[in-house]
Image 1 (tube, rainbow, N blue to C red):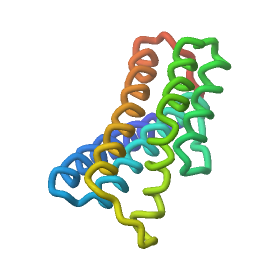
Image 2: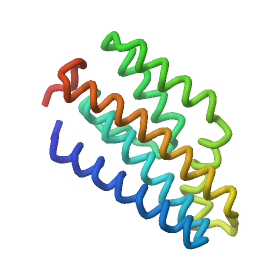
Image 3: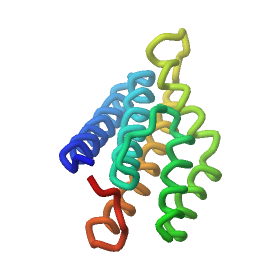
Image 4: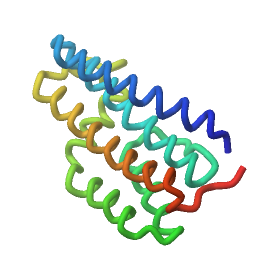
Length: 148
């Protein structure tokens, strides 16, 4: 596993999140939703790479949350695994909207309004907060991580 690649994914994730907020403020709702989705997706992929040693071949946020939760459960981090699962359950509809933005904002005639953009940005921020919590525990040496 490449820590440089993990850092690159996390850095890109934060950049996409910043751009999502800016796009939402400018009223570019479809761009905001797409950028928020990318932020969440890359943050979760960075976390999966760090925990598992590989990047799962999916773009679905809820599936990535499941992969991360299983990895955390597998190393005995039940509290963090439960936090990930709780997010996936409590924000299910928001995460579906976020996932829809992966293709809907780019290829389809799907229009996103200001409420959609706000919801996408909020959901992505919550995903990245969970990523931050796990990364913080990793950096403190509290979690085992993939070797490579």
